[in-house]
Amino acid sequence: MEPSDLDLHKAVFNNDVEKVKELLESKKYDINQRDKFGNTALHLATMMGFIDCVSILTDNNCDVNIKNEKGWTPLAEAVSFGSRTSIKSILARIKRQSKSSLEERRPQLVETLKNFQDFQMDIKWEFHSWVPIISRWLPSDTCKISKKGSNIRLDTTLIEFTDMKWQRGDISFLFNGSKSGSDALVVLDNEKKVYQKMNRNDPSNEIEEEVDYLMCSDIVTAQMSTKPITFAPALNGWIFKENRIELIGEMECEVYNVHGMTVVSQKRREHLSDEDVKKNKEMVEAFQRGDTSVMENDKAHTFPRKDSLPPPTKPSYNWDQYSSSDVVPLLGRNIQLTESRKALKVNVWMCKDFPLSVKLLLNVLNVVAPLKHFEKMKEFVSLKLPPGFPVKIEIPVLPTIVARITFNNFEWKDDLLDSSFAIPSDYKEDQHHFPDL
Image (cartoon, rainbow, N blue to C red; front, top):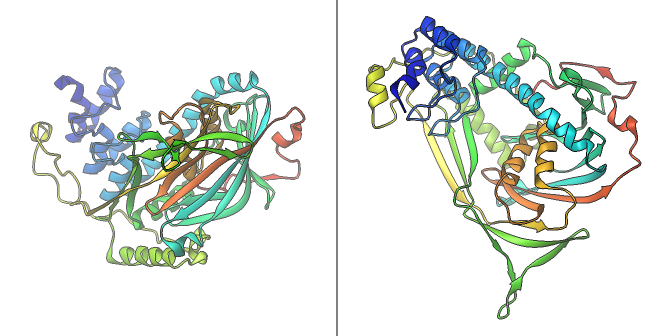
């Protein structure tokens, strides 16, 4: 990498706001370029608390999802530093980036859907833990996906499953391929009979609430280590072994053992007060004893409004020392990190005759499933799987919890009603109903 490639990093490191603007206006620099430590310019701005630089970079549509070599996003680093303004800028950009990504994928998906026969299919979710008392309280759900023309509908009762809580409901996502912008994707609350357009600008008070939560909570990542993963056919028999075949519904599936899957969980809390740590501990203990009043109702825990934290000590080295260092220099707070690794024994059931392709499934889910527990499924299905379609998979969604997901009851349908893909006439619009979507 030529030194000039890092001119934007250098300008941010020195908090030279005018230089940052000049470099971005020149269009000669990749705003998402990573340095030797995996940091983008936005990482540096957040770790050093340079609010103006954060604002300029996010306004210029930088990618906020890039992780550095330690596995942290700019949002994680912004939370660690404790600047409300930086956290809000990044959250707003995350939402804008997600929406623009949908618009970029939409034309190709619409064309694919038009050329594909209409169908319905169920996705069954079952959550399990090797901690017995937790398993008793974990939720399950059966989603239904329907496709007619270039329209998709996904019905689910599990609105959210993240961290140590979940939220129940009766919701539907409707994607209309003939529409664009804010009308293309809406979510219905079938209990309250309200709907919300997904492509919108979020009111500032909703982002403020999300900032409150982040500033009071651990910074957590839990991800699959995928590089060493291999798939080996599961075998039956003691002496004369043969590949294991199972029926999932009417589908004949080959069972594979997944080897080398490890869940790496990291937790940081250098930004938390003693009171924050105490409250988080109480939530963990409630989860472990199966306290459903805590886990099923996100509103049961409110978080106080926090001011920006006092800034940490400024780094004692300059740009040249940072860029030539052999170890990752500390730019923000002293990191309080705990890490755990757990090897998992999971399986995948592959069917060579399943009517859908993995690619089409991913395209559909990327559009109509903006729920966090779906992200792990999409990550797993994106792997280089054995031949066929993964009719049944087991994947980790949290450090102690595995989801078993089954695709079944697939049917070609030529009698789906247009009304199923439209907003019911008696539903009223409420653009604040789902603040996290």
